[in-house]
Length: 474
Image (cartoon, rainbow, N blue to C red; front, side):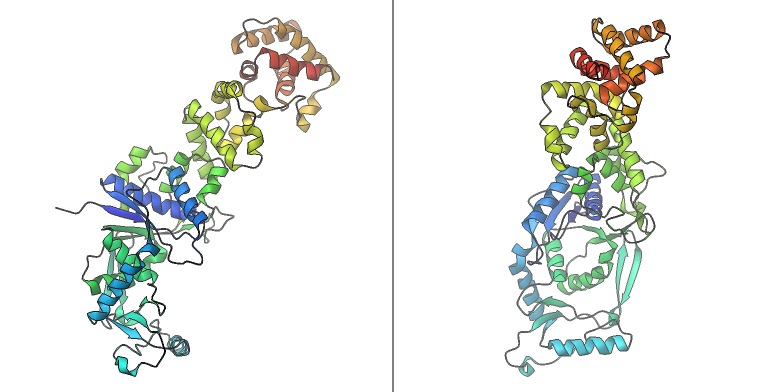
């Protein structure tokens, strides 16, 4: 019987959850969910100087926002240091590792000589076969792996294919530092083994680490997990992803008004594909995702595609859900608190009624907020420059006449107000647009808005009449 699939996401808490980290977590989550397995979360906090609590919180929060739940408790790597040391001592006792007393100057000279000779093995094995009796007094040694000197180390990678390293080019890597702290290489292997990880899915910047880690696995006689090294994300121009391309934390995408479902859908298509399909439900992603379908070349981040996809999700979203998303994003944007203070049962209901018209034009929640600005605007209404130019003495007079016509409308709805405005235009020899545009400006302060009759319905009779009166009497 094959072992159940266990994947892991193992970020270092030295900053926010990077967009590339979000994609790695997603791929691990999808693979585990597809095969009925588990995705574990390990925080690799062994770099004590750079690991911070706020970064850990940002990672956990980012994963939760993306909807990527993990199984079991979070594992903190630093807390397992005693176990890592125990394994290093075991290798030492079995003759598969050794104490190295080389000084910093000796190591620097070795590296310089190796580079001058064009070699990638930078440590020359100085202490590999020396007796401990030769150790200099007062020097704390590191513990190094006694790596194979000949032959090959091979990874049959699920994405990269067969990758081969000549052992003569790989160093006797350090397992335990002179202060007794385990290195990243050792800690990862021990943790993955103890957590019974079956599949290691991570960025291809870890590919060389895979060779070194496999040597540790083999020295310990442990099964090596199946490896899948996914290409990194590049910018649209093919260069390394930078902040201007979108190398931001997941929290930044939340603040820019992206829906987590849309970002997740966008991320799954960065490197993985299923024919020409672009939009996937969560269940479709789970059912279809597999490692061999991931391409070997770097994926390119494209904000325009993300915005387009987000717009598709907004248009297809339930209106009540969008109202909740509208409110939640206010906690992450400048001056969001100011707008949040204006949300009450009445404005929330207005927002819900306006949502079908607003969401048709919005690609992000920020555009949704902008489209709903007319609901929350203070009187007297601030006017955009183009809108103000439309309010001539003649159009102001027209607005005043419209206000009187609308005052008599009952019951108040999009349909009844539309009938009244059309009748007014016809009776006064105007085209509908010549009446509707000044009406829009007077009610929203802008030249563009949701349908004007939707605006009339959403604002209600009293608010519409006072806004019209404000502009008619100036």
